[in-house]
Image (tube, rainbow, N blue to C red):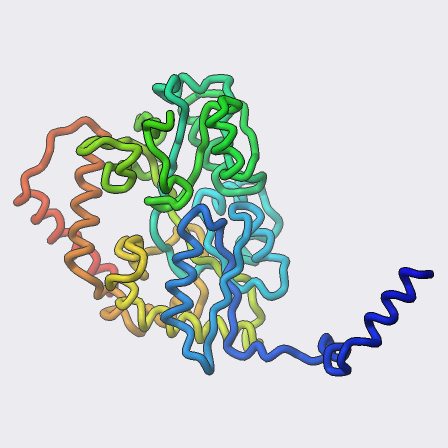
Length: 364
């Protein structure tokens, strides 16, 4: 009774407009919600970049929402009213489809493929290789996150069995220091904020991933360098790993609804102003993005597809220097993973010119 009386007094003390607030519809015209992964990765920064170029203070606004990543973000996108878009891992989408997630391909489409996110394996000093982790504890972030999916698929390909733990990555760092776990796995665009400030002197190092034919058939081979993590990787050294595509996905929205129109408005602003995201001050991962890249087996959001068809020349126009750099890095990493001989600059330039002609052909 006392509690009830206290609650009643508190309610009576509220201003009249506060009591009526829930019945007042919020002004959601032009507002879209974009769910990201945790702040330990880079998707929050990517969402911030998008908000900065899309928000105009009057007709458009992006509200980033920090999610749990992975399967949980897919569930939120499908079922939570208000979550319009989400940044998802490509292998998580594929895993969900393979496991028959009900109506997934009818309830989720994509706006664009984004950048690649690298697989990081941070371990204690005694762990020299992936094989040393057999039957030991490896943290894969919170349950339902994308790292767990990648870790399971990758280690199955490598035929290494580990005991997976599901602590928040900051908690896992402390457990790694104490020796309670042997390693931390994390999928995030480099350089990942989680590893900021970590040093080899503290007993941490990044473990290379064996790039055999089974692994490279599923994942893109790449490298972590001293430029990415100067305190964890020595000058001039590299660490082989794999990369996972990040996707900007959109919920199955009713055409002509306010939410649908809001997303259409977002797409137009994002695609139109995309070149500015490659400029200094934005995350360097934008240099990897090709708006016209397709996601096989998945449907592109129709207004996004229409925009790209209407503006094929603009969509294929980016920073040519950035594209050339990314392409040459791709060639170097492919040669390294296959054990082949290096290429001369003239050979790389010729292949890049062929690649550009191919891109032009794809637009027609």
